[in-house]
Image 1 (cartoon, rainbow, N blue to C red):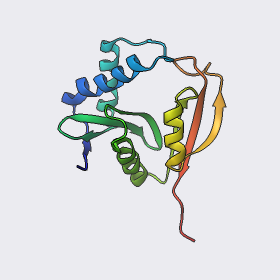
Image 2 (tube, rainbow, N blue to C red):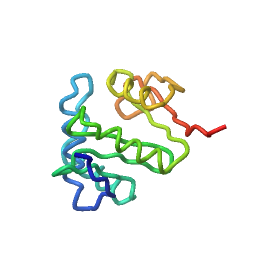
Image 3 (tube, rainbow, N blue to C red):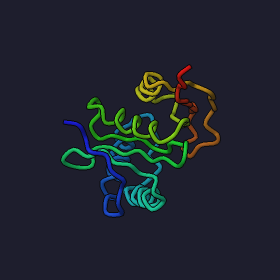
Length: 146
């Protein structure tokens, strides 16, 4: 079943926050910096800014937050079902270039972005991000037919 994509509404904030909070809670190398309420506030902020696209099955199963060409967040509650690819393909259809950051420790995400045509353009020691963990900036550019 192909998931439906739609823009998030304010009423979706609890489900968006639950996906993000669940991933953070289940990731052993990530410090638990944010509470469930802080995640809810962050989800509402991104939705209010009109950044969030949802992947819906019979519930909110994934989300991508994008401001212009910057992907701020991509989370799915059901990995391996193609939801992240579907959301990312949608974002690629909206912009000729995209950039995003992921933690160096997030090996599945790094493999996913490389497989989806992103290239690594920068690595940091993490001093500039909220988690203070080494990270990588990836970039994607739409291929122009010759």
